[in-house]
Image (cartoon, rainbow, N blue to C red; front, side):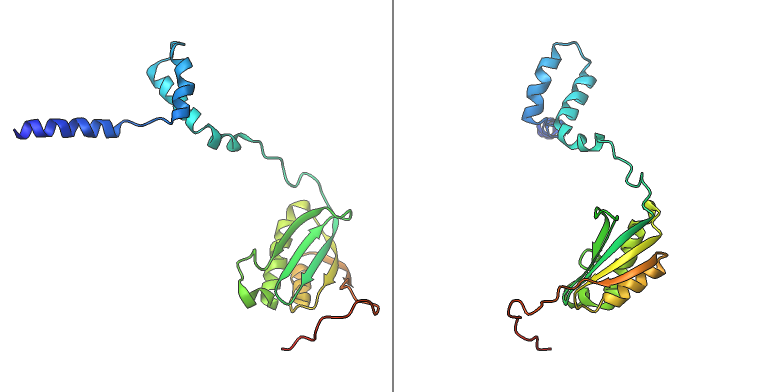
Length: 183
């Protein structure tokens, strides 16, 4: 009796071990069966058809990122009360590399610190290194704490700073200003 009970269990485990193909893969595999492929080849084609959407992005060719040399560029530093963003562009304005405090893993009030701005500027300098950039013109915007520390970090990363320009928008008695900030 024990042998009879074990037989159905063994059959059940065999059924469970057989891989189930996706319904779409089974439909695609039916016309290929008549073509005379070996059973192993049929299984491989069914598996590749089921995973075809996953394999397609891996087949794309990746273009060389730094095929061109950009000797000079513009570093845009946006230092707000809540975050610091740094972007380096070429002289025409096309962005070559960018980063922000939030992207570097800082959260909450730590995003607006001078240390976060230093880390962001160092990261952007690393990202722009394949372009062989040597000189940058720095444009600083905003009242945040990371203004000077981001500039120092760019300089310590090996970039020569030609010009530092403050491009913070200032009204010439235009719209009514926001209420005064209480700190």
